[in-house]
Length: 390
Image 1 (spheres, rainbow, N blue to C red):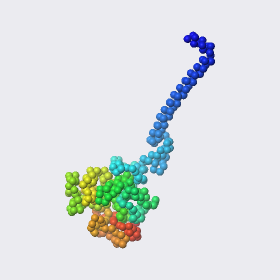
Image 2: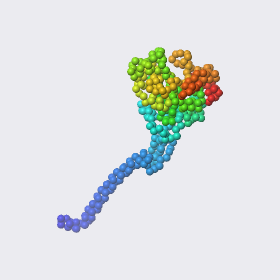
Image 3: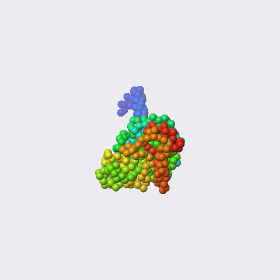
Image 4: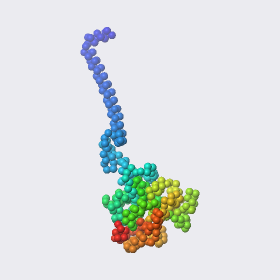
């Protein structure tokens, strides 16, 4: 030990070199530890900033509205779950499967009061194979009443409606699936239209229409009639013949019995409450999809039978869409331009018959009519103001 001190005393430069090296080692170790600690802290607080920016209630930065989304300025992320888009979705495009869509549409608020000023609307749901040849007539019917209606169009996949950006039909197509006449896929399309329309909490009434349908009264009359009604309009009657009870399958027993079997028109009008039942129901839909096969047509029997069994007191058992079956056969009569006269349209509006509306009798039994060919458009536009009052 004494010799070591003597060596250092003889070589003072060596002692100073060792001191410098020791200082450098300590300095480098301190820098490394400091950098590691700083990186850890930055990662921690960076992740916290990102989390809190998602939860706007805890963010110190005030979000600003941009269209229907809320943009958080901290990280410029977009939150599209705003109250407005939740209540009244303007973009009908989505990637939901039918099961996901029906589940979402079946949600019913338990709180009776609305946290917004609700104006009840009528959802007009068009089930079509392609173009809407009577579109100008419908655009005239809807003009000036934007607050009181919504439009939904189900066409074959891949088809795009060719309408102007000012048309009420612009961007109103829903995600669709192939449909075959006489099969359960027609019911699938109806439920798909209902489910998409139910996503808008302002929609109160839901009417199914085709490309060959026309409105035979003006919008205020149709709106008042449907919004004020205590009942839905699903035609439902007992037909003892081959086209009624003759289509019943014994495989449906005991869930559906013969005396409960009903037939009716495909073209319905429903309240919001009954629409929710239809998109939520799976048991009887499954029975019909398995056992109502050609020559049994689910679109003519599923809703009439289901409502007869469970919700008959909410249904009027009649349709509000006029159609002419007088020619017989599997399809109703189609009217072209040569058939359209003022007297003909008036006869549909008021044919002398009375029907029950709420607790009273009325001469207004039909609000819509079908089937009309594309050639009927010209004469119908000509009589729209004088006869149909729009």
